[in-house]
Length: 314
Image 1 (tube, rainbow, N blue to C red):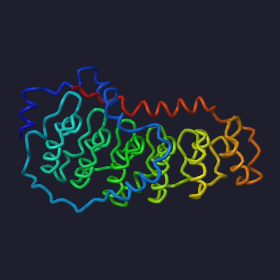
Image 2: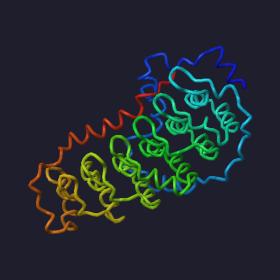
Image 3: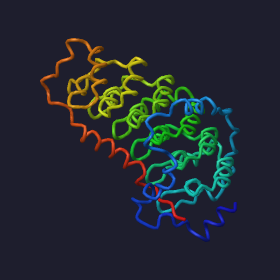
Image 4: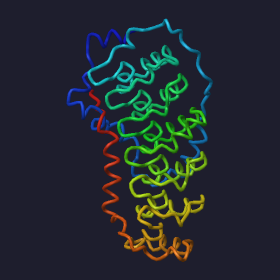
């Protein structure tokens, strides 16, 4: 195959720097396509979620005796030629390799950052490659070295198309597992879209069966607690409307209402006060939650992990 010959004579140089910086810092040019400052995806995004539809019929298995030599080529960073084709957005080469590797373990190969081709396809915003990989039999439940599934990454990026492809193409059992999976920062997919304020994705995840009252691992905060931390009134209102438990307690014994103390949005405080059980309105005697600055640092550290392992070269 042409890509195999090209690789043999001219090693890809995207890892010109150290292995730890291989992926992420150079990907900012790709990630710039996503407006990370968006507070809500609103109606246009909701329409896009409805528009994206897939034909998820399983593809036929390739005979086991068909073993292409390019499947065994691996760089010093653990990348296969499929990883490289996706990183460099060589879509034709990637699709050809996927078509030749249906239901082959090759599709689930993880590099030294434990990223599969599916992780990279979401990071580089290539929904057609994502769809092809899932239909060809890759495992969407695999996690990278930060504990993120491909769906976690789509939620972090606010990638509507990749989110839609993944949630439609995966089986119900796969989706159920991915929705409950906590990454190594203690966040599930609902936590991530809440932190980043993607309201349409919050709504869609709840519709898909995500536990609206699931607690993140570090402090036991639910999506509602996170919304108060971030002073996102629209998100607070949405979560309450979707049935979030206002009386849910963090590991320190705090309700979402308790987290309104010392924060500027009085409307959030008023709404939660009216809904919180009377015996839970007083602050507990236990140590108070971290201040908003510490919370912001926690969320930022989670963001920094995402792209610290991909670097693209021209």
